[in-house]
Length: 192
Image 1: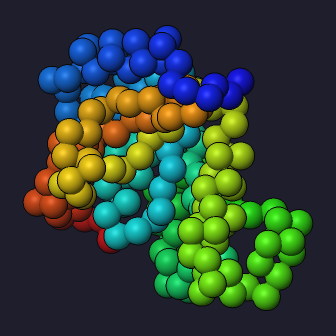
Image 2: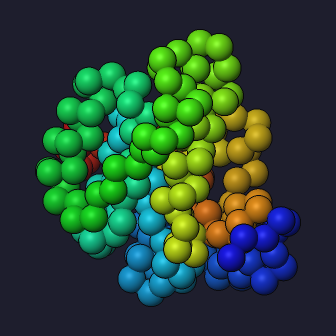
């Protein structure tokens, strides 16, 4: 069920989760979310970018059957798609879901594939935002790789927050990580 504003029960639930897990590390937060259902039924959303391997590895170490949503805009570099395929195989991800815009939406809104040149925001909505929102239907929350160091708007990012307009919980287990934490984890676990 969709809500026009952030629902108070979701806000209260996110606050309780932040209070109860504020001193835990990323792996412990993920374990509680994936094994204990602390945030309800969740999916991990991943770009399969270079740093995404950390969160994917961490989640796969806990539960290889976690639903992993990969948004394929159909405008990605071939190298990204190869990396996504190889990494999914290496980590033995058992519920990888490739998310794309519907053929009907593409035909109606971007028939010649040039919308990104004319209207980048509309292209993003068509190829990323709306397909992801459809893929998240039925989930209570989703796991992101967002971190505080990624910009001023994320500088106070909590581990748990409410996605406006949906009441879904967004789980940010790497919120407090630094670029050095990412590099160290990748090196220690010999990740590509």
